[in-house]
Image (cartoon, rainbow, N blue to C red; front, side, top):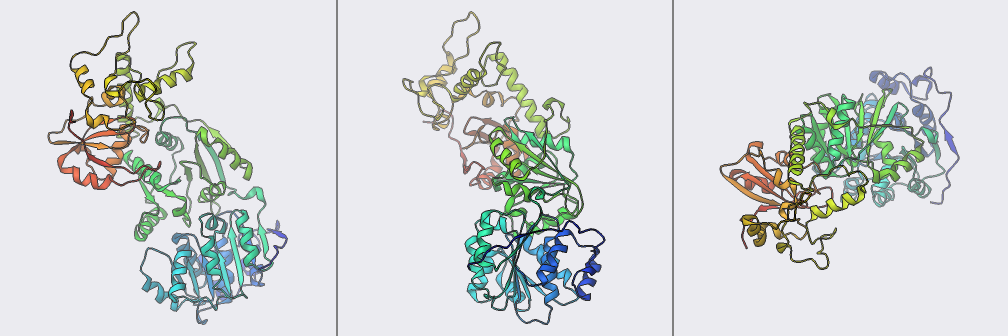
Length: 601
């Protein structure tokens, strides 16, 4: 279609609480449904959209989340149609199943006195029940993929559709649904009314409007009010080695009553939820790996106030509407600036206030400043509390982590190890110290990328030597230590990026105090410190989350890129099945196998 966008129509400044739904062109059955729901006055978006929609115009509505956009489009649908209409006369396209269910429930409630029936269609459930619901529905609400499935099977006809709603259009297009959405629109009649709802307006939304809408009116809030007005925005700089530990410190400072913790990947969401549970917090993960019944169960618990923390990815969180949610926490900044608006819009809804908290690392500063500039957000910096000032009862695993760090520090001070970072001496360049520490952790003869440095001898012939003290000569290793280094066990030397075994202070010192198991099997894991910045405590939390009883775990030797675990023989098979094949946030697929015996060739 060769259509031109019309002039922008701002939401009227004069909309006040004195305006009621009775002032809008709505019939008595619809007004009765609104009264049953306790809705007395329209929100500014509803007051602006409903009259324009009932006049037959195509509309693009930009408004922050939680302002009543769903009812703004639902009211014109229930006003125009009733249960007497045969066939599907209205269609709503949503990016996620949760949002589809939310839209359908809202329209059902608004149209209950007019007998209008809705059908929700989305993936992950059986087709036959959906086919039966479509046959008697006036409104179909669904996700693009499943809608196309029904269109191809012939179980859904859109020839009679008079109104089409594309909800959360900006997010839907950013998720790569554009091709599917346009395929669906090709099945619609040329003469129809189209609504686009969006919190932000990227260029893709405008291009979609130009192709598929007729002179649409653009109803919008002012650009500097795109974020929810009653949300306060704060950020903490995450400078430590473990973002997980910084998240715990933020939670201890903020004391959220309930919160959604947003992660960028499914692997991150699973890890964060596991770590929170290990610290004694009530947390559940909601991501694309869950079945629909599991997702609905978690959502119900969150809405009922029985769940304190819901850890979610962006896709899974669309449609989450929890009344009175006190906090939204960004474990990492989203990849798109627009997504920040959607995330933080989960709180501060329906007149409630809320707080948006973000952990920002130095490498994210570019995205952070772009976000602030794009939406004129006032984000207040807050400093993380010192680690030594934390609640001593924060959690058993967290306390264990602190104890292990102290042990490693004492061992390093006593042995002259370089495995623990020390403050630089007066006049010393900190960067030089960090580089030397990095070279020590890689072991002799290794470059930063794991390649052997020019002129370096074989790794097995370059044993670790104790750092000489003042006035001492550097002494070669003797006795068993020299023999063990010379033989270079295959189980430890087979990994190209492995440091010399004794160079990893954490791997050696971490054995002290670990329980000795009577019937232990030694396992090799292809992930180490670089993959578990929280150390052994983080790895142990993952093992427990994957079904290993804490009492069945023995010593954990954590090296730079691999680890050795001692596990009771009875738990080995189950743990290998549960942990093997799991993908970490960095893309590494975990492999857990029985380690070769020490000294094996």
